[in-house]
Amino acid sequence: MLCMTKGKHEIAQEPQVLRLGEESSWRTVEDCPPHYSSESLHICIDGVLYYGACFGTGTTTSVVGKERGVMSFDVRSEKLDVIRVPQGRARKFTSMTRYNGKLALIYTVYGKIGSWVLEDAVKHEWSSTFFDLPRLSGYNTKFQVFCAIDDGDDAGEFVLAPKELQESTFYVLYYI
Image 1 (spheres, rainbow, N blue to C red):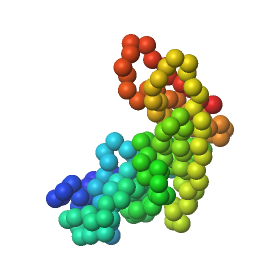
Image 2: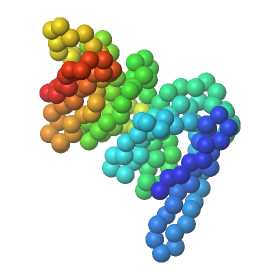
Image 3: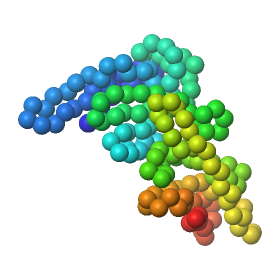
């Protein structure tokens, strides 16, 4: 179990891990980069917890030069790391999902779905793919990715829903 205390300005401080077993104990995680987390953006894939965060350079009580990115916590090694996100729209991701077994950041804009897939966390390497959304005749709304389907067959399927519900009738799209 990972536990982080929020300090001044919501900065994560004193991250601790609870090891369960005969001698359960809390251990402080060393070398935690100054950051604050996005409580709504997180996913666990193959023993690594990923979560959206703002980070930068600074002390343990401030984050200077705030950049949006991703933090990772490896359950096995009990290590926290910053994963740099590509410049541009990738930093405005609105959801995280598992895509083809890897972490994917998703952003929907201008009739397209942008997907950035983490290929190598150590080297901060990402691949990107953009999908055109179909136009619905007579329906003027913005869609966002609600979830991605990851059934292991690399199909690249998404479920989309309106960003805002303004009408009594609305579409949910299943994109293949």
